Amino acid sequence: MLNATWDYEKELIMSTTGEKPGIGTYTCTKCGETVTLDDNTDTLPPCPRCHGTDYRP
Ligand SMILES: [Zn+2]
Image 1 (cartoon, rainbow, N blue to C red):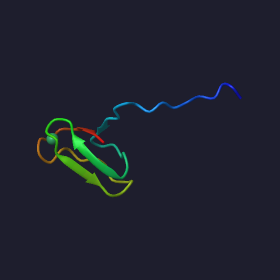
Image 2: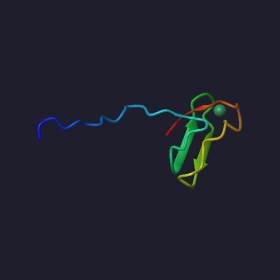
Image 3: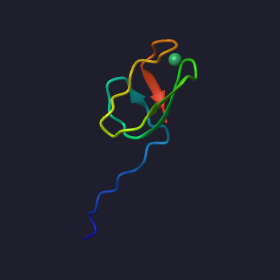
């Protein structure tokens, strides 16, 4: 099959409050606060410091 589709990873994957991005540590894009999720079913909370909602891995 030559028509396979490829999933290209985004260079910068953003995660937002309410998403379930999986286990890992996420950094607030506004203030740099880190939030750790230790369960795949955890949802990202608003940033505890600045209440921002955008994180990067
Ligand atoms: Zn923040």
